[in-house]
Length: 368
Ligand SMILES: Nc1ncnc2c1ncn2[C@@H]1O[C@H](COP(=O)(O)OP(=O)(O)OP(=O)(O)O)[C@@H](O)[C@H]1O
Ligand SMILES: [Mg+2]
Image (tube, rainbow, N blue to C red; front, side):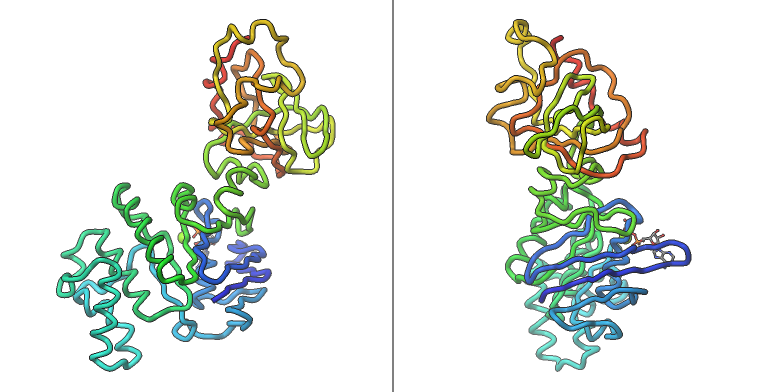
């Protein structure tokens, strides 16, 4: 099933939990809502599930608007962060609950429950209660309970956040595998960018009730639309400067580390303040003696310079309008350009927290 949100607004008093969200989730894909706490991820899931109705906008399952359709009739399976299992019921009864509520005949209940417990690797644990299971096993029961109803849409709200790192890594690949086997359209919520990158076909990065960018993990990593995405997805060095030249979608930016070149991801103009986002792996620290003969800080940096070479994964950085705060410690040319940098657009970030995440120490090693 395809899912479409069109201009969805949800207000709680003066707060707009969702301030106009439009998204299209494709048949069979694992689509992740990624963003910091309070950005509206759970609100979006609740609206898809039918627990909450939007104040404005519309949600479509395939081409059908679902406003007013009660949760039980939407064909949606949900896994909550805290699993919400019945503590006094056995694993079998927890999973069978929804089927019995729908008056499914007992032999069919037994067949279906056994089938999904096999799928999630819980065969043989039917008679235990949740208190006799590990966190990871409880999480599987919650997934089984959602799948047993053959949902058209599976919603998972931070399903792994209560688990330790090792179990989380294992379960996320199991969830991915199961999702690919069943090809069920899935919306996965997390604030963990690594989890999102590993699991997802596509990701919507959300910020303050809006969608900042939608793309595949690679697209978000290599072509962040703005500084928020550049900073939130993976690690980036943010280097501020002033745009000196624009040509063919590239921008040259004069920074404390010299003139750097990156792909422009925003409408920039010469003289404008901008921020270059550089992936750590796009930088290479070379032996200083090979640069001694070159003039420092040349426009664009020399081809084949310190950050250029086979280890580049396409765009390693970008430049957006704004100022993340001064990056101290630059004393020499930082070689960018080539395929290693691009210019991301976007609003200026507040100073402080963002700037603190830059990594000037890496650059101090560079020769003058
Ligand atoms: N029932 C409610 N009443 C009032 N405000 C609410 C309600 N539900 C959500 N909000 C507010 O709406 C905003 C979005 O909340 P939401 O739960 O969707 O965030 P989230 O992205 O899921 O965050 P988290 O990662 O912390 O779970 C927050 O500012 C939250 O305080
Ligand atoms: Mg939430």
